[in-house]
Image (cartoon, rainbow, N blue to C red):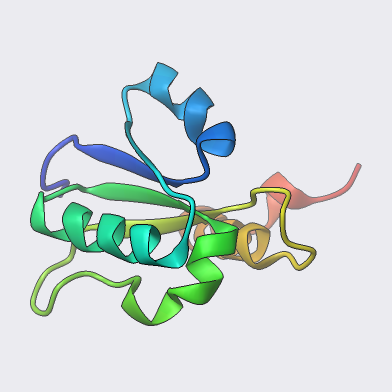
Length: 109
């Protein structure tokens, strides 16, 4: 069950701007301290889903989890084009695999 409908996006403003169209609260960050503060803020402000740009998620993965005894927020890592590995894409594949029971969304045609 969803706690509420609050959605946030954390990342460089050039990457996250498109999420504003979907009603997400934007947390534009330019350094690791701002990214860490944004993650702490979304936890305190009861967001349900938080999208985090991969460049920041890699550096702060140790704090990307709900508060103790809480299910939310759910952190979703999104590819941002700044990193060469596929951490964000792999996490999206795993989430799709859990939800659908297969990798069909990511099969190459």
